[in-house]
Image 1 (cartoon, rainbow, N blue to C red):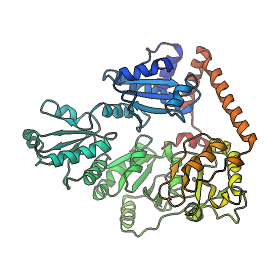
Image 2: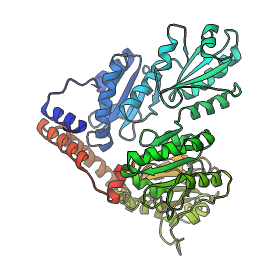
Image 3: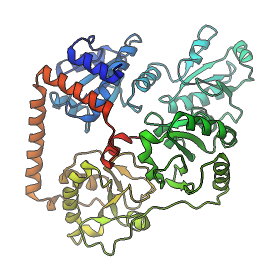
Length: 531
């Protein structure tokens, strides 16, 4: 039997799939469509973009499911609609935005999987808090994986306001409903005011027993949304990182091993519920992530990540990984009796080059220099995009290092985030952040172009010192950048007129490759270990 993705690709190649439920818009149709439809998710893409290709089947599936709910999914090819994409502030591909008419535009903050897109957009289609009655409450309880319903008296405006504030802030993540019907509160077995979480996993009903305050209810929602022992993967990783509490990873190779540890650790997970999250992770698919936790590729394995400070606490792999060993390790961690493991390359003997080299042991010295704006590239030595950026990063460093005045205001630096522990949680390479002078706790993510002049403009605009290195950008660099832009445009134009047969062949080839790929090189890890 053909795997689903390959089968779908073959159908696409043969031209026997149904018409797309994703509507393609252009400059002449975009404004009218956005105006006429109350809620629209728009994808701004480029045909040559790998992430866009990966998103395409998920986007199609979501569009079909959401069509019956009156929610439209559209796409815009930015190689053909450059002016429209520029007007919408598109700086990378794919960019997804939620439109509620032309004047209400927000970034899409969900995952790029069909189920996540559907869940996210359904939440967007509802008010932040849905008013429920006896006819709607039962269906609402099962409308999503996590649903929070408040029960309060009709004249309790304070509780109503508090719950609405929680919902307004967290509507992208959970469904919120409320009722003032005393009979429904009685049926739920609660005394008003109350909040109950209804879930499609673990214990299906959890009653909140804390203070009726915004921060407390928000913390309850985050805890309720995470399974007692979940699973780390592309769909869940960001949620664990944003939970604000440590994450305990259990690396397992097969279903039997997973079941053994899940069953054996339930009591421990209950004890630390809301304090430490526990989750298994597929060592076959995402084993490369073990190195980020200072573990060897030896399974099973266990480690705890302090997600706020990005500290790692790996359990000694020379011993057999038993339930008792894990329990003892967690108890010591919770008591503050274990020091974090710090992975670092040696500190460079000198910093004579144009770019300052950061390792774990000199990170604070360079990045937290409060007098300077510090632009840092977090890279991986095996990352192709990082290698392509390297010569321009050196050029950028030279602009500031070779100028007596600018060198006092700006540092250009880089760190191999796969070989050094850094306090920042890095989810892709290269990641570029500016740490402004006097405001190191609020780094600014860079999302612009990869040209020297773009970086220079960013440093001047976002840096505290407003250092202007534009006069030092070589004219040859600007000319080369212009040529590169024209080259990309020409490539995109060429690709847009490829024959349908060629496109079908590519679709089938990619599907076969995705099914048969078994490479375990570091380069493969770059695309496969996408948490």
